[in-house]
Length: 122
Image (cartoon, helix red, strand yellow):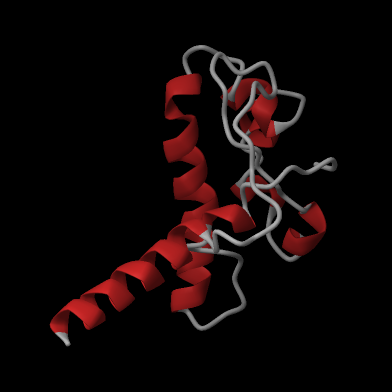
């Protein structure tokens, strides 16, 4: 019985983190946004975040550090590249977790494929 429960917990955890192995759409690792190494795609819909302050993500509006998409700097600038995963997981996933803990509607917090799909629109 303990083995069955352990396998059930492990399987459930794996499904929450990586999604179902039967999902038709899988993210592919590739060179994106002039990245020095292959990375997963990332999707972001501004329309889903219309109620949020733009300055929460777009620090470049305040400190004039950039004029383009997030990826233009966070992937292409050598000093920022090593911090990419930590920065986006902290900012994006962190905000979703905070909202979820506050009982508000939130975006994905655990299923990686919910964010790591190709997106043609910024």
